[in-house]
Image 1 (cartoon, rainbow, N blue to C red):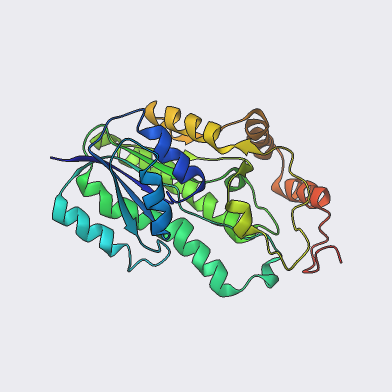
Image 2: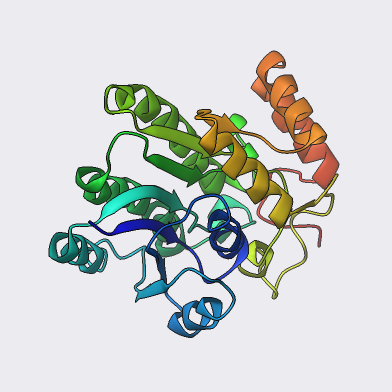
Length: 264
């Protein structure tokens, strides 16, 4: 039986770094990589030793994920790891973001992860791992990054509960919660036609280091992975402080006044 890993969002950012680093951790016959941009996936295949199988689909379209399901049914592989790295966010006041965009975030950040896990579980055995890329934004409500942060809060709770539910099968689930991380995330999150929404980033971490910690924690079967001193400190503080105060501090840092007008 063919042994494989499956990684979504592999065309850029943490998904791409995940592919490059994971092959050094565990040898498999193939790595199936899923993303919209097939050219990026083909390009990535030239940078790794493990054979890559590109599956070019839009993961926010749940119907398209059936292509992946059909491939699983056809090949019946042993999936030793599933890493859901696809996702995106938008920075702006809630009233400024189109409903279509917000629903698309939910589709990609939440529904696609649930679908990928549901389709993949029948092909996973004792010792397999699931890694879901969430965010430190999951730990608190965040005005002006409202829907994105909410989807990541869902993902953390979903992953940690699923980790417990799958223990009987010897399958672990790790929710990865990065702080600000240098990837193409910002290219999509920021609206170039408007003034910057987020004006203060206390630190921006290196994607490769975040991924290295995520892989280490996943292989240690931790249910959550948090990289960086400031990230861990913030995680502790938002547990201790009232969220109303946390939102007030955040809004003051970014000079938000609660209206849709971002710093005229």
